[in-house]
Image 1 (cartoon, rainbow, N blue to C red):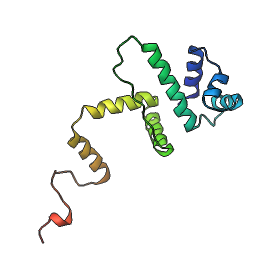
Image 2: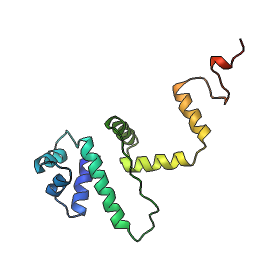
Image 3: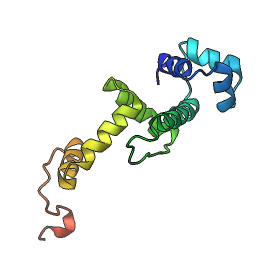
Image 4: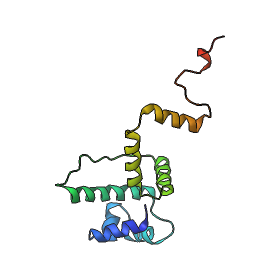
Length: 137
């Protein structure tokens, strides 16, 4: 999550850094540091801020067609990997996750399996079992 995105969101929603500090159970100076130093925003705070942003988006779109909202929880390690993937794609985490889930949902499971296997194993997927128990003696 980019610091400028948080600053813009606070401004667009007429919220202060003190309000955000309260939501994140942090001191206002801590939030000031997150938004103005190279250290950035810690993962725990990113999760809280993204949930707050999502709640605002839902409130803004009430009355319009939103079929479903989805909230996911990840370990810090998994979240870091997701954050890195979104960064490599030059997308916000929410956009990257939405695009990735939509892409995966429209594909055949066997095609996804082939790609995953190819990334781990140079032998192509044939759909046949290849473990030692299945080979003739």
